[in-house]
Structure formats: C-alpha cells, structure tokens
Length: 122
Image (tube, rainbow, N blue to C red; front, side, top):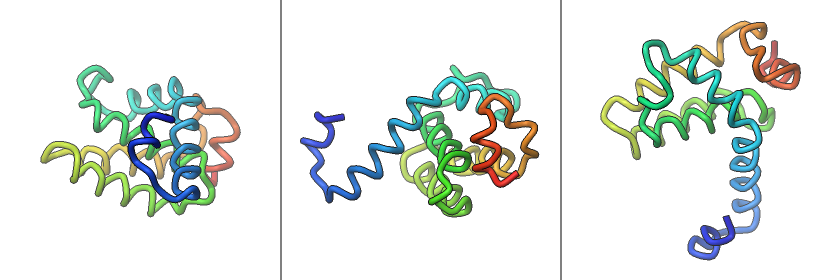
C-alpha cells in the first residue's frame, strides 16, 4: 500500500479511510467471498471479473461492517464504480448481489458472525 500512496498522494484523512477499507476487506476476505458465491446465482468466483469481484468485496464489507457509511451510499457507490470500471453489465450485476445481501435476514449472514449481524441492523 505504501507504494500506491507514494504514487497517488492525497489528504491524510482520505488515505486513512481508504486504508481502513482495504485492510478490512483483506481481513474478511474468505467470508466475503463465501457470501459472493452464495448470492451470485449461477456464477462461480473464478467466473466473476476481478474488478466486479473486488467491488463486491468492498461493497459487502461496507454494508456489513461499516456503520459509519450509510447502506444506500455503499450500494450506490459500488454501482457507480462498476459502471465506470467494469463491463457494460457490471452495474446491474453488482446491484443485484449487493441489494440481495443488504436486504437478507441476519440468519443468512452466518459466515460473517455476530458483528456482521449487528452491523447489518438485524
């Protein structure tokens, strides 16, 4: 990450926020991928484009673990990033999966444990 920040200078607050998101996703990678696999009907992880997969990971992490970020904002930002950097269908694909996860009952978020249930508001 230090290499990235040395090439992309920004405000310290922005750097800290982004770093916390990246580290959070890295920390929860396996359960995030498990949820992607469960909610991406008819798709396997290896078939999902890397850009889309990383947007999903970040979006799910924000939805379930970041109470300071409004859920609708996380969803909308993920869709916009997908439209910008993904394929023509990425926005719809990301929206479908994140919306299902955002609105699913807490007992279906079991792989992420109690902290995720509390953060998801269930």
